[in-house]
Image (cartoon, rainbow, N blue to C red):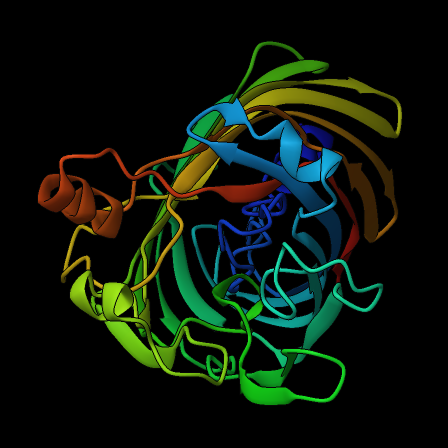
Length: 361
């Protein structure tokens, strides 16, 4: 039973671990499940490494293959290390603090010389590095762990703090001799500039010592509408951006749902499930103005984990099954005003790699 619960913890450490490219699903302190039934005291440390490369563009669910064929695709390289410390007060209550360290690089032509340029120097790279948005969350097992040994549900509520730089800047090159210094794209900003509220439900049920199922629901409410960061890359916002409220970046909500099954054999556990994660076009609280690329990713999520005394190791490689860049609020406004459907695109990754460990102190 204890081994199974450990695997539940490992199976839930990947919230937003497959953050996808231009759809700016950030790592913001939600990378580790903080508790397992039966923990009554002490600390737990989780370190989750995540990497992905996004380059395939989608409008809705339709892939824009011509972008890669014409070498005009935008390529995002993203690495993050989420460090989570958890304090157990008793067998039901725990408190978790996560601080992400993020390194991003974004390669494109359109942000620099332009997609039509034939210059060999047209493709340039902007970068960002630093601490992301931290999160502090309180958790409680809803049923008495001493009695509910086959299954349980954990509820969590937390606060996401704007500790990540949401105005990170780099150079954008107009030609071989001219550049401007301005905020990097929203997808590689270290934070979103908002103070948000996180809500979670996660649970498990064990059919036997070897077979179990799990589920997880997460939502980040970001009441702030816009953070004031310009989208003009050091230039002047266009009249269209001003008219449809995309001259500054939005502070969007985020969501994630996942479910799957575990099979345990000795120290190894093999897990498989489905996850849905994304950014909505409209937020639960606050307005919808500001630039955002809403959308979602449905992924198959295999996980393998290995348990040792006091340490659990895991590897997860979520693989995208469906990618959908949905219409934004600005897209809908422009469609209504012009009578022509406007639907922006976004680049997504094929998969992400997550490698980490949980240490019980």
